[in-house]
Image (tube, rainbow, N blue to C red; front, side, top):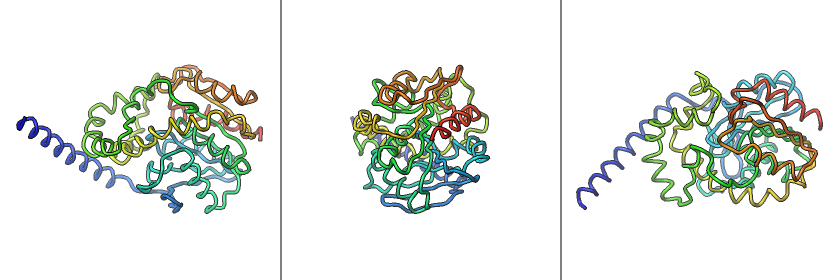
Length: 309
């Protein structure tokens, strides 16, 4: 038993050291490139480009605003495009006492809109960002002109979400230990395989790690906050899924037909059954990361939904 204890302590210390080294390397290589706005419960990091009607891009689990760089460039020809890091993601912070529920994230984004004088905007939400976009449409109907959902998480999961299932850690002390000591080493070792699964069946862009913000997901804080998001998502979706019929603005759902992270049929039906006039479309040969792999198709779909407002 003594030997086992010594081995476990040695592994923990090694994990803490390795994680600290990974975190410091990421922090030295990346810094906030946008603006920072303090809101109740944290700080929102965001970028803006273009001119025209407002569009806000909301990324998914373990993502960040850089996931939308190419899509934002395309949309900026016609819109004022805001790309935000969700609370707790990228370079946005979420204070320790701040809830990770969709209701709280919605509240923080609305306060950010208030502070930056964004009276009304069309929303684009990818994956978990789709569920939060729907929450915003429920919470601030007069502020949201349309909602375009890209491979969205719209209803509680019946099973896991591929490699992202590992984030479901309800116990916070265990979550903190895994985040600070074990998550980064394991993800460095198996990260490429997991990323390939998330992009499947499409190829991962060569510049995704840096230009697409992929490497930021290796930071221990990203894993910790991503776990909080994952655990909070189930309850958040239970509370909002029965209310989608209350959404009054145009809504569209675009899915990659071969998405292996979320079930296209399940998460599209959750919206269409409540909003029969919602527009739905699938992209053949596409997976879960269509904002990155299919930015042109996404832009055209978004424009078609915005035009309905």
